[in-house]
Length: 598
Ligand code: ARG
Image (tube, rainbow, N blue to C red; front, top):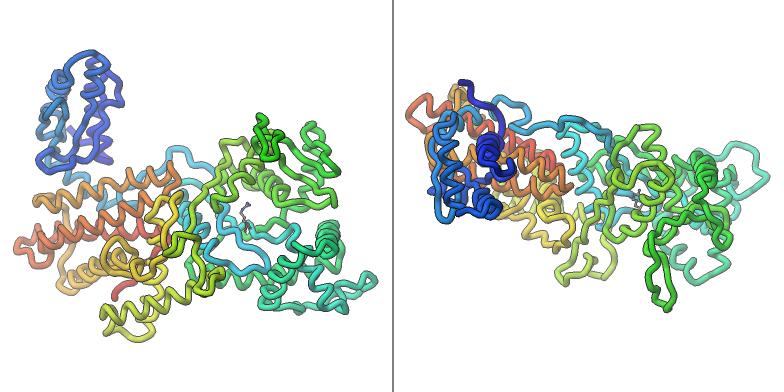
């Protein structure tokens, strides 16, 4: 009889599940997990405990019945009843060997694909015109990029969109400030009919200087605020000079942002911005009005999305979810307006079935409002829109990370700092010391980025974590550099094997550490599907770390090239090669690349 293929836990689950059904219990009771101790076998199943409750019988009796049904089935060497009714399952070597060779021959290293692929947009990073990115954008970028990779690897059709913040009040504010600073520019002359200059009147440095000043002033100066609001409305209405000026702001900012993303190894499929849906807004407003859900509210137009009233701070009542402000009293489209129109665009243009918004937890109310409005308008349903929130990266004081001077750290400065520290660390640890300087510098950058990304992704995204660069950069412990080191070590073994003419062959699991490594390799599918279902890359990060650990234990106990038997040598080399493949895939899904050597 042909042995079944695929993930071991699934194969065992099938046998056990059918056995539970045969004695009148649910199939799900047959689920098993890795055994916690070697003497408990390879897998453990606790289903008899619940089964005993359901049938009012002693769980041990149930476990004994199940064991009798399973014993002797293909792949199962031994099944034991332990304690009050646990089932310990020992697998046949052939089953283990089959699975090992299957993973070895599989380009996906044992990972499955979704049966029905979906079209998915991941909206992440969310950079803005005129504002350089700061540490707050780091998590949105790292987590979003990893989710994009995970969904794509799982077989979905995924588009990553930067959703550039290039519309709305901030744009009007910049225009109004520049009008005060340089009123003679042709962009402000309503009678100007020639083409506008091709060279931007401002650099990124100008924008970064102007914006914070303007943002502070607008809070205290009402005239100024009105100017900015007017400019916003005029820009959106299509005033030519303003549009030309705005186009410069966008280009200057986007080019700088792209450089920063490149340093992080992050790319987007789409660089659409809020402004790209502006042309959809009039039609959308009309549609919302036609559907009877657009309501006049003190001169503005809103869509109510609450389902009940709750007590307000002032003693009165307020809606449990605030309304979506579609058009302000000045006639401007707002942040939520462009978000709603973007949903429409993603639905119509890309047939998106699911949109993941990887944005700071603090915007949760905004998204709840927009998602409800979309559902109410019949665009995408509430369950097709997900806000993937996350906590903050904190300083050692437990508060959101600040520079020593108390300011917000720019992402660019953070990356520079990480790179410099990584280079120091290489020197200190004597890593890559014999390699050419240029290669060493590249390795330093890779180590730095791996440190930063892994430190972020190894935490459940909802939790905040403390920025501790020394810890992140350590070559020991649960860190990015440790994982890169594990990869590089296996690559070195592969190179040496090639030099010695040793070729990988069929895997034969014999030693304890080989068995442990294989069972870990087999767990990849479970980790990947968990990360996918829960939108939680840390499950995959955990897997990568466990895999590196299992490899270390294997390598310490089972010499590869020094093994005296040729078949054993070929088998162990193959096991190492399967490990490397899976580790590199797992790291790639976290956005991390390993060097060839170091
Ligand atoms: N630009 C926004 C900000 O800095 C984030 C954009 C998030 N995405 C979205 N579709 N609203 O807050």
